[in-house]
Amino acid sequence: MISIQKATTKDIPQIQSIAKTTWPIAFRDILSSAQLEYMMELMYNTDTLHSQISGKEIVFWLAKRNDLTLGFMAFEPNLELKDKVKIHKLYINPSSQGQGIGQILLKKLEVYGRLNAFKLLTLNVNKYNHSAIRFYTKQGFSKIEDVIIPIGKGYIMDDYVFTKNIQ
Image 1 (tube, rainbow, N blue to C red):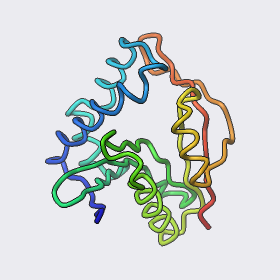
Image 2: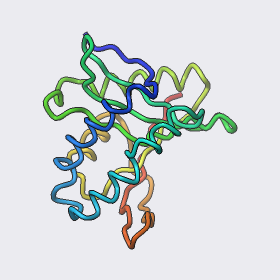
Image 3: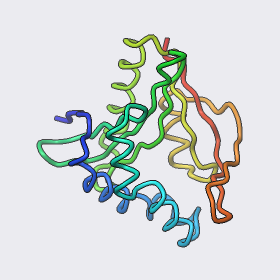
């Protein structure tokens, strides 16, 4: 059985381990190795994760079976507007993919959103990450726009924005 629990700073090594395992597979045909390394360091260094997990803007949930962490999700509820929940990260260990864990995390987030009167889930997905696009489309998300986001050192994120109405 899969359980979902809120991450604490002691879970940072598990989050980093899953990211280090999934990113090279998910983005090997999309990002250069230099950009992959840059983004991993930018998004998954210990100080950044510690700040996000300790703060109140970003929430991390871990998907676990027994004591084994299989994946994680990070999201940002827009508490001021009570409008949307922004999913920042959703990664499942490759050895655990295809078991419905991503769906479980999204369903739990939908329930959380409804209970807190949010209307939309939103996320960005790389335009060339076809497997992620298929996954989110199957989960009821729709593309609403294209965005290019500069992230430093001349790199960009070339993404689609997807949303899902949860009310």
